[in-house]
Each structure stands twice: as structure tokens, then as C-alpha cells.
Image (cartoon, rainbow, N blue to C red; front, side, top):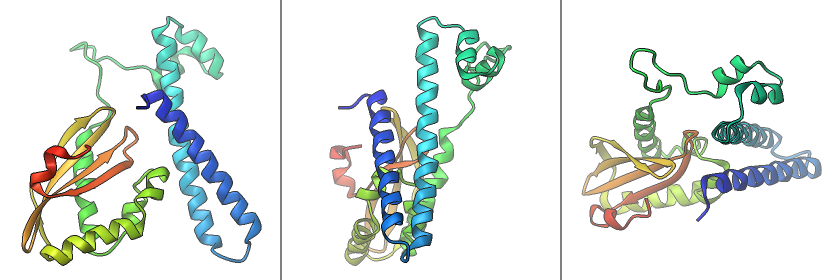
Length: 214
């Protein structure tokens, strides 16, 4: 299994290769799908920026753990030590002495619940844009909508969502949501990475939840 650092390197390599593919495609086929290629390029570059920023934060954290000062880190980045701390440090609440939380993973719950509304309406694009580029290649429109159509064919349309909750899963977070269809109950699970991108989706029978990969 890849550790967090290896996963980041793998993601960077995959995204760079994908960007090269888009550039080659654009160079060899200038007449077709120009707008689609530009959107793909933008999506890849945006995710590449996010992954690179994550790698930079991890490198700074490692440097600090090894005793490097904010002055040296800032000097290497061409910024002041104060600017380096403000960007990469962990501010402390002066009253409680506890690291200030700057992001709530609970914000993932309404995002995950919206996914099922899009699927019920046959809208894949708003779902696909929330996935990492690597996952988009696996959970493509044909596969995702095909699974959803199969469920609907068996138990009818989606009628309501139960109460979603968040569960940690290694470096990821998983939002679990009960799904009530016309003639059956399922459980939806959507896994998000630290950047808030979808890295996995499951629609499960309640009896199979215990054996799910996440």
C-alpha cells in the first residue's frame, strides 16, 4: 500500500502525464473538441496545483519536524519567516492553547448528499468534476450512470435520503448516507481526500456494508 507521500508523487506523475496527453491531442487534432480539451486542461492544471501545494505543505512539515527554522524555510521560499509561518504553520488559540481548526470536514456532508440528487436527475458532469482526475478515468460516466440505472431498474427511483454521517478512513474521509428507493434500501458511501476531491463511490446493500472496501 502506498503511504501518503508516495500517493502524492503518484498523483503528480499521473496528472503530468494526463496534461501531456491533452497537449499532444490538441496538437494533432486542432479541429475537434477544442472546448472539451480546454476544460480538461483547466481541470488537470487546477488539480495539479492543489496536489503540488499539498506536497509543499508536507515538505515544510517534514523540515520543521527535523528542526529547520522558519527563517531558513522562508529564505528558501523567498518570503519572510513570518509569511512562512502564516502560510504553513499551525496557529494556536492563545486562550486554550489548542491548534485552531481552519476547515470543517462536516462541510463534505451536504456536498455528498447533492451527488445523489445529480445522479437521480441523470446529471453526471457535476459529479465527475468533483473527482480527482485519476478517479475520473475509472469512475467514468458510463460506469457510474450504468450502476445507478441498474439500481433504479431493480428498486425504482430514489425517494429520500437518511441522516448522513462522516467517518474517518485513513487520510480520507467517508460520508455515509442511507438511500431510500421506491422498493428498496441502499447505503451510499463517498470517499474524499484531504483536498475535498472524490476518490471513491459505493452504492451498497445494507447487508454488504461490513465487507465494503471503505
